[in-house]
Length: 128
Image 1 (tube, one colour):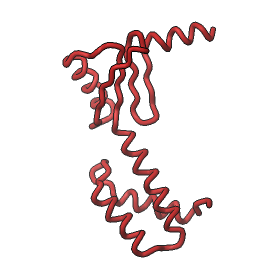
Image 2 (cartoon, rainbow, N blue to C red):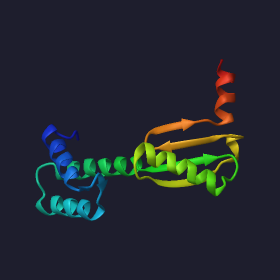
Image 3 (cartoon, rainbow, N blue to C red):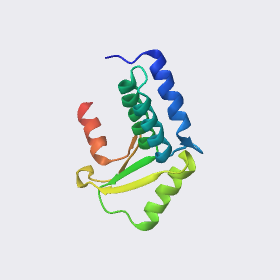
């Protein structure tokens, strides 16, 4: 079932209410979701699904996954994290090792990906 324009607007408004200082407040979000489930307004199931989608996207916007071929040193990690914080504000970071990259790093923050790996460069040469 498609979400109506009014239900989408209400879900966005309730989502904005669950924000605190530009960050998602989980306790507020739970209270909002509980309130919707308790009152059961028209199309409340779709509203809850859309609210969950907005929360998932907002959480991903502030979670950086940094992949590198080799283990990064602490100063390198701190430098990468400092650059991300300077550019995007407070972010949660996760550092992973991925030997398939061959060299370089790949950073994913929400739906944005910055790829400076050798694997990607080789694949682009193969495509040419």
